[in-house]
Image (cartoon, rainbow, N blue to C red; front, side, top):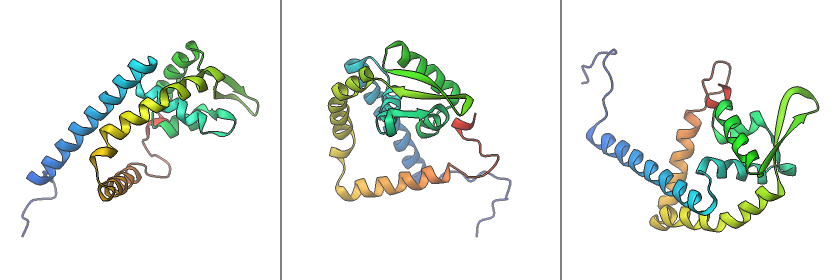
Length: 167
């Protein structure tokens, strides 16, 4: 019988601690690996690449800034800074929203599209080499299911949700 009081922390078991540390170790190394590849090949961090991908997949290669922040899972402030850097490179431009004077769109330029076309093959190879080539199809499926479950649990719906794109 567990005699721990409700006020005591639920400490991680040894196995949970090993899993947690392996997760943190792997995700930190993976993000660094992808960042270095993109810095080397395109002079941009991984987060900027992700923003360009979101735009290329959007209708007319454009998204409202608030929608882009939500899809990228980043704060509006961080997005604004990133878009400013991407604008400076000529890869993105901002357009005012005609229906909302305060709203803006981020739009992928032809130059930004060309950068994605040039860099995507190397990025996909880096992702495949670092992640998918190391896992069996069953492990890939289990990883995808676990990450989806975790992401869903961290995105509560309703008023008062403390999510990055709402800050």
